[in-house]
Image (tube, rainbow, N blue to C red):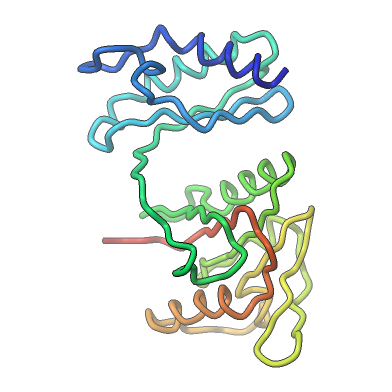
Length: 218
């Protein structure tokens, strides 16, 4: 059933072309990551980063075409600039975590934390083992979004148990300090806090870990 719906989605997108391409976006291998949750479809269209700003109309048209598929009520299409990297499991910093997704922006207040939570809930709802590392140490909001008001549990020496909500494992600096405490963070301290939350939390086996970051400027 799901395969048939995906086939219809792919077929509907074959009328879309990107200027300069010899074939449509499907035949050019630009369509990927099709995911269906109930009546909502998610997919990505691979583009060069230099093209992305001029292709929003194509993204919106793709969403319209996908929504015309009978079984689909709504659609979210993302333009991505995917690069292929070879990852060695021997060099994995945290054992048991298969994939990382970083949510970041050069501007504040654009919904990074909300995006991370929505993706995490969607991935969890289709059977993935999901975790969120709240790496925005200046303004950790993941606990507030997930209605978490408890602190992380200490397990023996140098180990922390992640908080679990809605089947998702979560760790945030807000789960380690008093909300009323004033804190001053500098670059090395921020880096150390994020590394420690990765390294000393008993995450277990995780399919996807999402991490939302504070404002990132070049």
